Length: 223
Length: 210
Picture 1 (cartoon, rainbow over the protein chains, first blue to last red):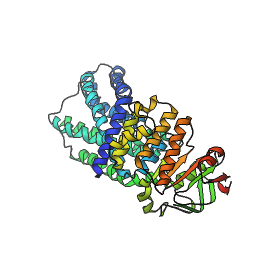
Picture 2: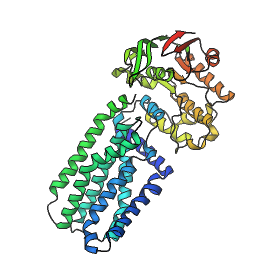
Picture 3: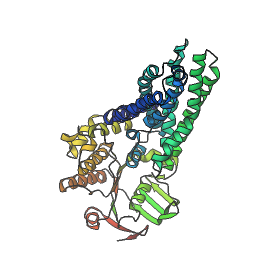
Picture 4: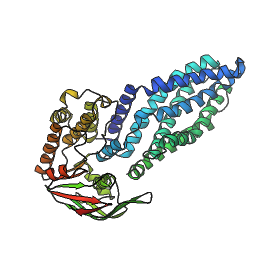
């Protein structure tokens, strides 16, 4: 069976489990929306200030809550499940890719719901080159999905896993936040976005390489 | 089929197993007994090729544990662990189908395996909604489906009623009938003696004949 077919099976299984648990839809997403709502309440009604900070706040919320999407409980295999998966001899890189694709889809959904809310609550200037946002969103989601999957793999089976995983994921995602925010600011200001976009792409590629290369050592070390 | 020579496992500075010597031949059923916390599960994970010994050599199905060859023999190993390997949000049938799809097993064997362990009517129930005994049966169904050459059982009778223990007996019979071997660990010496050709006691991380 091909690598991608196996990865698709893992993705389907993760999305099915998430669909049943509703962790993202009923817990993470509402809290993300509430946090977006709370920021204008705390800052006040200065429309120009809100418009300025809106995109940055959006990416911060996407980063923080997106990490909970990628580290959701339904995507974590128990030690017994991990053992059984290892015995099927699925390439650990397949599991990394499959889980990342599932998380990518869920982070995209998170972005798709919170982005309109941000526009309504903050009233940011819509950039003329808004089409780039259609690349920026998925690119950031992909980076976050792989970062979360990698962090989950790093702490799997450790006693402090639930505490460490978000810390590791957010630390690794920091360049994603910088890249996404700078690209958005550049689009709004009409300046060059090449540098932050390259940064973002580079981070995504590096995380992908790290995830694939560390998948097997992480599986073996979890033994 | 299994050969352990001077196997020892140390984790976080604690010695769990030491100087373990064990040989299990084809068609043999070997049981290991011992109280909780003596390293029975650790020993089983070494034999399952999932845990590389700190010292010594473990050879399973002609592959040395820790070598690249060990990964290749894994599909021939059936493991029923102490904890159910089930995702709470998926149905029993979905879990088996997921496993079958990844392992390249025909989907028709899913329902046959569920039937073989007496779960045919419960295939559409989520793992979170079944009893511990049914979860254990679902794990057994996964192993039935994969037809392993080497069967490893960790406390196989835990949570099971008398009907289900017959399922285990049948599973053991089918594995040895195909020329395979069975290694089971249990804290219950009576169960082990009833089922096994040979029983060995694990004391303080090492094996001694019972």
